[in-house]
Every structure is written in structure tokens, then in C-alpha cells.
Length: 250
Ligand SMILES: NC(=O)c1ccc[n+]([C@@H]2O[C@H](COP(=O)([O-])OP(=O)(O)OC[C@H]3O[C@@H](n4cnc5c(N)ncnc54)[C@H](O)[C@@H]3O)[C@@H](O)[C@H]2O)c1
Image (cartoon, rainbow, N blue to C red; front, side, top):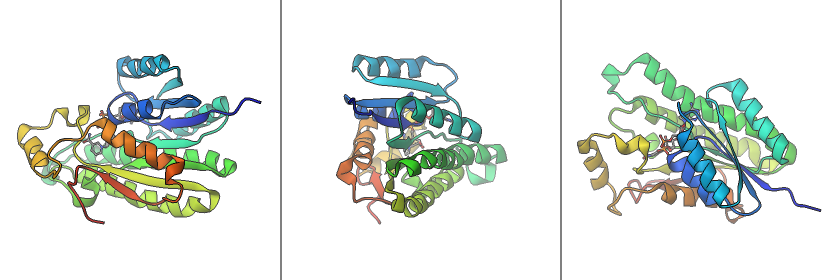
């Protein structure tokens, strides 16, 4: 009898942290499915080509996590095709920064709908599948600024604070069904998201990091991989800060 593969679904897996998670979790016997919402397919194709080179079955889907119908149908299709869903990594996210006094309502709405509602919709769709299996793990990508706040990021920090609250509620509701839900809160990580930061903001971040360097997508992927694994079987509802010590509180 052939064993079912371990099916890992990653949102926003075309680039940055999501791509690093895909590479980290791509082991023999694992199927990696990821989505993205890039306007062009190049980054997703590159991720797929790398995974194919590793001999791992992989698939990319293009839709917005803020679209409830698409979230449900794509996750369901992946679970049907590969025989279940073991792990959901809710990583997709974006920023639309502005000081509160200048922030446009549409930028508030967009960031909340992708970062927070998108995480909820994907978690809900995954929960429907995992509850039936009576097993599964989810890891949500929050942010240190969801805990400490940040200039110019009222929408983003509120969305990430929401992800933390959502993570803990999901953890409580789903624990009786043998589903664990945890979060990582990255600090300052070198990706497309942070590539265009003004030099002043960049320096401010760097001076606030005790370990003295920006993080890499792999630094975050290592912790996500751990939280999704059996090694973390007694952890749920936790928020692990991956920020070089930028924040050391509870
Ligand atoms: N880079 C950092 O310093 C940092 C710090 C803390 C938290 N984070 C969080 O980590 C996650 C990944 O960030 P990154 O730095 O790798 O960003 P990135 O911009 O490099 O990649 C973002 C990914 O999300 C996808 N995405 C964007 N909008 C989407 C949507 N509506 N539906 C589906 N996919 C969508 C993109 O297609 C892409 O694959 C985000 O949730 C981000 O908020 C990043």
C-alpha cells in the first residue's frame, strides 16, 4: 500500500518568506501547493521549477486569499487531488503604508481584507477539511508590528494584531479536533516587501535588532517548518517572534 503524501498548502508562496517555506518543507513524500496573486507568473514559475528539481510534487494556484469562493474551491480541490491537507501556512500579505492622518480608506480596507480576512477565509476553508481528518496544523504569519505598532502602518499593524487574536481563537476552537494553530511574528526580513523602505526607516529597524542584522526568509521558514511539524506537537496558540530579539516581551 502506498502512503498518502504530506500535503502542505502555503499562501503567497511565489516569493519571499512563502517561497522559503515551500523550499524548506519540500521533502520526499511531501506535496507542496501554493497560491499567489502576483500580476505575472515568473516568480511562481521559478519556485515551481526549483521544487521540481528537488523531485517534489508542487502546484501553483493564482487567486486572492480575500476571495471567499476562490479560497474554498482551491483548497478543496487541492485536498481532493492529493488526498487531504496536513498543513496550512497563511503567509500571503501586503502593505499600503501611510501615516494615519493621510491613510486612505481604500488602503485600510485592502490591507485588512488580504492580511486578516484572507487569513480567516483560508483557515476556515482548511478547518473544514482538517476537522474531518481529525488532524492538521496551521501556521499564520503575523508581524512584530502587530504587537508593538509602527509609524505609517496603522492598517498593517492592526491586521497583524488581528491575525494574533484569530490564531489564539482558532487554536482554542480546533484543539479538540487535534488541529494545532500557531503564529510567527517576523521582525525585519529582507524580501520584496522591505526592499523599497526608505533608508532612514531601514536604519531605524536595524538599530533596534539586538542580533544586529536583518532576518532572511529562511530564518522565518525554519520556525514555520518547526511549528508545523510533530516536533511542536504540544504547542498551540503560540506566537513565536522571529526578529533577532527586536521584541522580547510575552
Ligand atoms: N518582510 C518582512 O519584513 C515581514 C515582516 C513581518 C511579517 N511579514 C509577513 O510575511 C508575509 C510574507 O511577506 P514577504 O515579505 O515574503 O512578502 P512578499 O511581498 O515578498 O511576498 C508576498 C506574497 O504574498 C502574495 N500575495 C499578496 N497579496 C495576495 C493576495 N491578495 N492573495 C494571495 N496572495 C497574495 C504575493 O503574491 C507573494 O507571493 C506577509 O504576511 C508579511 O506581512 C513580512
